[in-house]
Image: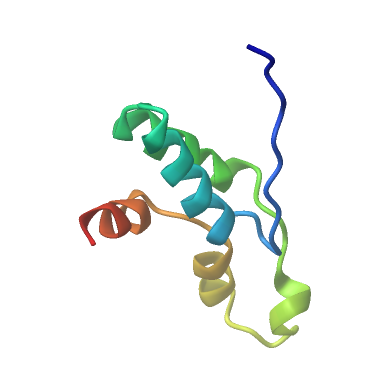
Length: 79
């Protein structure tokens, strides 16, 4: 069959995009461990969202908002 690339986009590319991609990969039979590993790559290539929260934002909060954790997907899988 023909294979076509796919792109899903959102502001940070991690929450809606990450979850949507995870659901698609699950439906295709990709193991959860591989999906979570791929999701965590976000932390190496994340976008600076400081402009969305302002200059006075707590750096720890900005870091939390711009990063991902395995627990994010694990919680959604559990739900």
